[in-house]
Length: 396
Image (cartoon, rainbow, N blue to C red; front, top):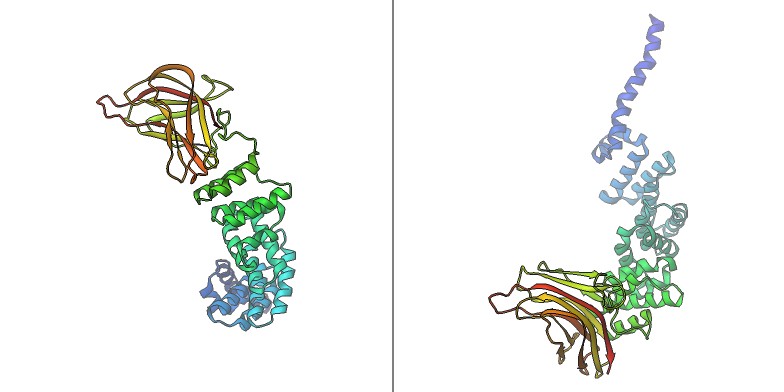
């Protein structure tokens, strides 16, 4: 009997221990802060000590107590990175800045290829003014953490004293990401600098990014800078009308074709009716609306005061109503210019058409639009087909 009792006592002790251990492990695993605060058994676990450190630091405003909790967590599990980050923050608040920096440099090296805590690492480097760790974390975020890029760039410009300094600290491979963010946030001076650096380094950004930057400059009214950048990209000998033969898909940006949707008109490139090359632009009016059509356009860089001639080939088939299809030229962001071709109705084979115009001194660019005005007749819903090809603008 005594032997049985002696054997039962360790089992009973183990059962009692498990009665405390199992609930504690369960609640700590759920990051239950109330349980951690109420039950000392939570300190048996690294996560429990970590949560206690967070409570002491953020709620109790006790960085000293938080540092002790974080150190206990690290003694239990040396690889618990959130405890290291918490300890760095606590040491900084305790005035032990050099110790905090030393630990952050260690963490930055150890976590060089780990993304999980990179944002927290960046913020700590910002607080500690630890430039090496900050730059490493910043470039890591540009390369691998797209959702964090806007916040990282905003933090970086505060760290280095302005948007124009970000390029100095950005790896060459990450400059396209930086350029895209600068365009998105409309920091165009800094974006122009990044683009220029990339070209000087022999790494000109891809066409998509360059078009976006030119487009942003145009929207901002900086037409002269947009023209300069465009000519550096496409070359000074490039035709004034970009993709005038529609051999490529519309750029939908910069000095390229833009085609807006319209439910009553179908617009598409086609290879069945080309005037020259392989493609032309086909516009089909479906007969469902009295449409005021202005949905195909391109901005063209020109010289103020210059004499020019718009030349294009066009074809039509069964265009109805009394209002035909034509091309017009207007000033881009300026007034004093409107020139148009004769409207086309009915059926015509491929023919050349021209429009001469003079650019006002206030204009640095013009806009070409394919137009059809609304009809006032009873039978006003236009139906039929129109093709456009070989569009060019040349000095007279």
